[in-house]
Image (tube, rainbow, N blue to C red):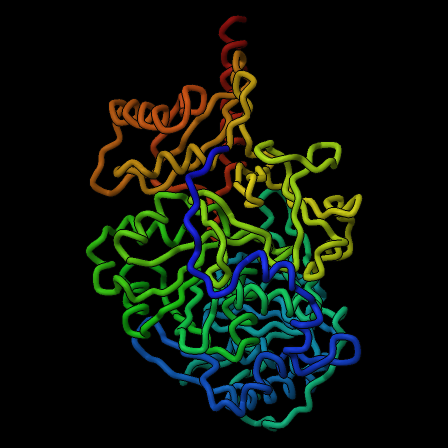
Length: 566
């Protein structure tokens, strides 16, 4: 895979020097607790910052209400929640599930769970009963904290744990449930934090489940230094920044880096309890004076779809923008530079890892559009072939983390099941990439997303990126469609801007557009215009859904052909 000539990032420290000097123990000294003898996440994210007098949470609702909560106020709230949990039988190491929108009660529940030495399990508010039941059964959660809007989803769940409900003034609590507000108001604002060890858990996450049932991802306290390093080196979160990570805390990027990460640094986080659209997003950025923004490419592409006019009032305001969740298309980078005057950098990670490969805002190194960047100091990554041999530059293979030489790596395997991805001294991510000569990583696609056509291996990311450079295209998903002659052909599903009509003439224009930008073999031979693309609740493309659709249609066509012949 080719890349454009990289320009140097304007960081304050040289990447190579930072990587060479990295020692995990240097990071551990930044914490109050000791990972070997005793540490508490609520203390690290809240208590130790009380003396600063600073704000922990800036909250804004969809209907214009807002409030700020200091670290001192969150310490008291967390103590009240911890007292409630202990009274209800929650012990250190037990799981507590939270299914709440981005409200102050959500943060109080998370911090209170950690204060009690328990394990917080996020439940995304868009989940249905089946997804919720699977996760609660997996973790053995002892309590669920939710609100009235989501309470009905728990009604038919077998062996549902006790439920605490957050109500608004005038609402009644369902019979048998715990009145969250009333209970914590009556509890003591003092609770001695329960110390745990680095190997103990503080989060129980789940994979997105794009190709099967979600797997449990246990997160130990040993992950905290890695979360801290990402916020410092990749996000470059500074004391004078106003930070907003728009990712939902029901998912890893939001919980790791909208909650845990900034609070570890003693920095305020921002919660916006409202729907995502261009108007609301630009409004929060303007009203709050956001200077450091993080989110996913899906969200950024929707901002682009709204056009440059809504972006004009905040142009030049954003000092740093970080992108994670799926590869960042080069067109997004160019658009942000032109219309927001903001550097947007791609970062790569997984629920199992946190972030491990980044274009670091704080560290100086070449930044290539279309590249995920360099391994974060504290990790060593490699590209492996099918025999687990490390590959040289410009040869596609699977991205892997070298376990022995990655002191920040915390993932040790899935919860109560085997983890084939860990073997031979590596953790294999399942993502196909190429190593560039300068050590940076270029994304090709998930291993099962790579297209084989007439002997060529084609990464969907390149084709998708070329498509969205066309002014009529908002989003695109590219898959391999089964083909008897070529094994697969490249097929693109395309979402157009609202004012453009889908026509065969436009489809041919897009085919030629990609062909001139990539190569004769990589253009989409078929283009299907759609209103939306299948995605996980966290916004990642589900290409496997589209592949499955094509396989089923091919089988159906073959069946009809057989019937006709008979």
